[in-house]
Length: 111
Length: 113
Image (tube, each protein chain N blue to C red):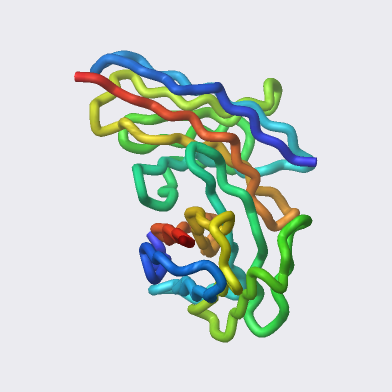
């Protein structure tokens, strides 16, 4: 079956530090990969996506590259801000018609 | 992007009562919507897939008589928690897909006393 494994949190960084949140997946076929962000008390918002191998998704300074050879989709940002503090979910979607989510990684950025 | 709304955003009810949560796609039509449950500091658990004009598809372990889903139109799905008990307290999130992207509602916080 499908599964997504995320780096365990919580992650605490100082402002302007470099961020990496690891994500690996197991899936049949060729899934699309997503990163979602959830702020306290809210639903999930799409952060970025990639639909095929070697695609790079990017948004708001965040990036992730679809690596089929390592089945990974690691999230990176060069310089985090306090406003980036949230929970980040890696997810995949394939032709089974459902999304599979990682457990989420809580990021706290301190000034 | 597409917008999905939920109502209410929070609800408190007494044990034994039923609660209805609405999920609407505001600017697109959704033949399929999804209902998730999220426990504190945990990931989303898919409860069921709501299909417009037909019965919902429930995930294993989810009681269909407990969590009634109705998808009567292309823009509205409802989740009714029947005879709610404190263990049903949770954060419920719906979603709908458009153009390959899943858009989520803001969630409904249910507290059963």
